[in-house]
Image (cartoon, rainbow, N blue to C red):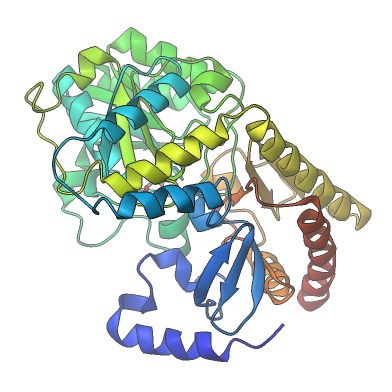
Length: 433
Ligand SMILES: *Cc1c(COP(=O)(O)O)cnc(C)c1O
């Protein structure tokens, strides 16, 4: 491994002109210390930095790259698309195709609107929910992240968690006043909130599989409970599948858990690595959206032809027979291998995976919500992270993020990763003692 001299120079220069040197906080390595590699290119399962180091990539642009970097068919489709222009601001057949592809993939989805980020998607979905119900309040779960718009930037997981500022300054007190934050996986808390405010609650928004406080699975019955409580009180259930969408078995939480949400938000995978988000759901709600209805929402670059091309190409490859199963097999293999490393060393920690998502908490206790996630040994994580990075394996630089897998990762990559992980673990443990 080369040192990262050029990266360090670029980071110092960036900090002069970009806040913290990055365009999204977690990239700065703030929670693990040190300076981030500056990336020169990605190919398949690998990232290459400006100092010539290669890394096996397990954060994959924070989830979108389910086929890996620069998949040849996605690149070829983009090459052809760019020659036809980069943006029109007028409708295209591509948008219809991607809408149909997602609707066909996601059970119960009837209409969908493309936006440019997951943040826009959740902001817009809640606007629809408030308009549909005429109610102001929204329930969210502590440690779930739904983007950075004002009303949901409350107890919002990873980024905010690492910064130690669960609520950001600059958010007007009124903007978050109608947001109720409850512990994840706690149906009693939801019942109590509805007992007190039931006629004021427009929606419950949830990450059906939580990926922004580390990977935390819903307890059996939690999502079913949310469905029945919201139905009983005339509130909408919003599944935020920006992160878990097209990464769970069956493609979605709706399919995997057999639950029919009223509204859904998507992003990440559906953009194939270009900036895309989407919100959708039942026709009766989505027909409230302008110009079909009165709820205003718009976007200069929404439905951008390059983004639609990348997303459509990626989703079509993902739906080929055996592709999702292969990514899931590799995820399970990695998780099994990590657990073997941990138990061989007598450590009480566990990795877990679902679909093409995986996670590892350095905590002896089961993690089921934000409070329990916080019991993790973040100092050990930081040392493990850097020891792994030095060995050419790049996982998300925070204990409170998920791991991802792509089609491009080979079994040889997994072997190399597990060998590096064993050594990195030993190094980290030796340093901590
Ligand atoms: C990443 C994420 C968002 C925000 O998406 P951006 O494209 O970063 O705005 C929203 N919800 C969840 C669950 C996410 O993981």
